[in-house]
Length: 77
Image (cartoon, rainbow, N blue to C red; front, top):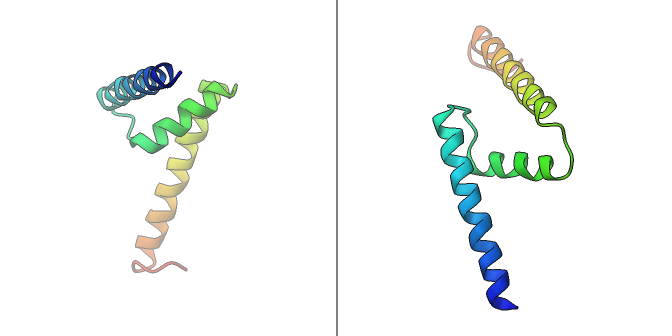
């Protein structure tokens, strides 16, 4: 039993390492924790394309907020 659990953990770790390397090669900008969350969401049935759209939109919004803060002298309004 414990050996099977250890094998599953090692397999999951190897899979996440492979996905992280692919993420780096594709320049997604996701860190390991964010990538793991995305994988878990997809495993729970979230549409990967919809998830990618949400991530892109959140990044656009964050960039717009940063740009607005920089325009106001570096201080949040």
